[in-house]
Length: 260
Length: 191
Image (cartoon, rainbow over all chains, first blue to last red; front, side, top):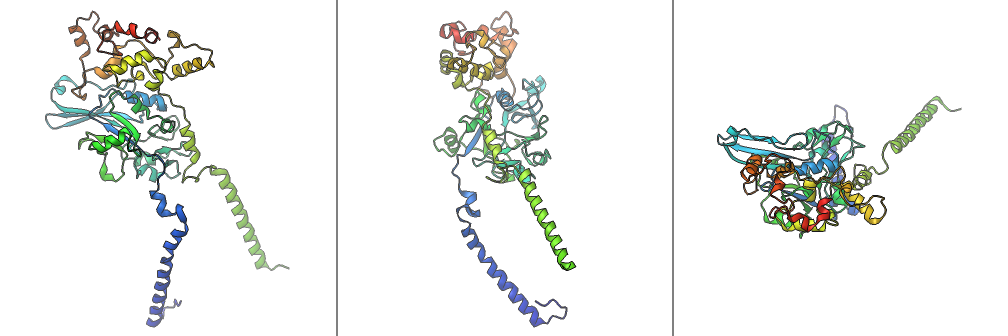
């Protein structure tokens, strides 16, 4: 190929034809390559699932704000004081159109403060919203981890390997739901695991185990006969911040536009 | 006699080879064995995490021994309440009782001595109030009381006492009077 400045128009056009021909030919190889990669090829990896899949359904209309779930989670996962892998928020709507959001105390017992009587009389409606990891199918926290400390298991749990985590906090900032924190004892990122260990041992999450009203329901969504599958079929459910495209697996009943 | 240029090439090849060997060795040392086997992460972490011991007890575990009280609770208004909600986690107690039952532990599992630090059985009004204190946010259909006022109205002598609820309500089945408990499961209610 001639690169001299005085290239003639004829030479230039021939070069262009050659380049395009070889380019087009090389592109035709791609499907053949993907086929050669066999069952583990790019295309199949994303769709084939043989493992169980789990889901979490939070019914905010049933939550009584007893925070027994918070107790259970703290004990189960040794969460340091001041941090939470799961917590409960309270949304209170007043006559003047304002909305107040608060959470329980940060130390045990995790109780909600009483509203002053002059405010309490103007309450229009109020409810609790338990928060926990959404186990997003497109998790921002996983995408930003620079060292492969955060990963997704085949059955959909997003976990943190504290041996690999360097504590850069990138994932803490990336999670749009504020689920992650830096554990002050290990100095690594920490988050709700949907009690991966309990589930692998045949149980359910500690918070769902502790919930006395059935506001937290954990179950296998790959089994059409499970309680959660039936409820997901019956009820109209929502996810938090659907506009972010994170595709959360934690679904809610009874959300309001103010809940984020 | 090797020419100067050829020697240069051999030196370069040597340096590159040493670098490559060094890089492979460093990778072997620094990258954990299971890294990359299931994806860009250390697969062994998944196994370690899955093997972590569960702490929170389930009601099913408790009723293995506390059958009577479990049945009573399951038939009353507190049927969805779990043992651990009021009694604490009780993992140490459960394990100790299992070991005692299997004959592998020196400890026995009878009487108040079996109550461990992560377990309590006092009739504490504070525990009742975690769910039943009148509070903004709770669904209207959920039973709630203004603690002291309710007890005063019902004629309690110690309306702000630590065990005031138990004066009238049987915690395992609030639809029954407190005297019923002993008749059902004296052993379990003591321990």
